[in-house]
Image (cartoon, rainbow, N blue to C red; front, side, top):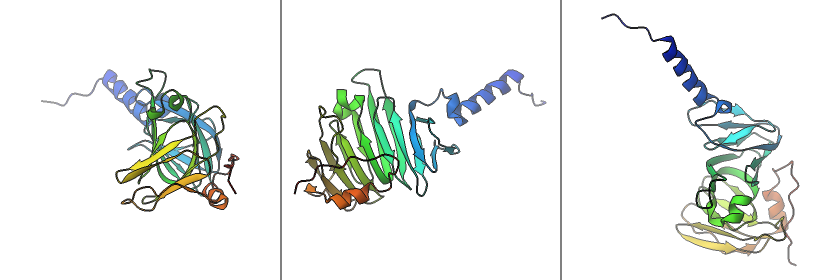
Length: 231
């Protein structure tokens, strides 16, 4: 039998599907999570099996985006619930889940810091239900209690510090945990380290101011409030 040529309607439908999955601005298949509030130098976002997109101020970001910053680059993401997340140079960050304005039980924000330096201030999702937000790294998870946190991670280690809270009425507390143990940090300027993928978080200790400055040095555009340090 001779091969039948596909109809024009079929071809049009196929083109629409291709546009939907290859162009997030046409998005019906992926969920918008927020936008780029500020950016310095170069950064990109990509979905699995899709070409990367160059980011600029006001670019939209989506659930499933892996965001990468270049050398001497930094950016700030503003999520739709007012959570802010800043990335330093040569960082990799994955938005794994974002649901907002559904219900207290359904709303949630989950991200994974794959590599580099970061700072975040939690927003309305964590304020309403702290357990609904989680920040994961390769070696530990940060449980949120409404807070301001900075850190630096790579594939086998992490350093996490509780920063001075921006809202005087907000809670400022985190739990850092993995399968080997957990610690709770409830005082600004204190932190923990996970030296490798087989160790629990170290006991909470006061971090030296110079260490915190070094930790956030690649986050260039936004002035990071310094934690109050005891003498």
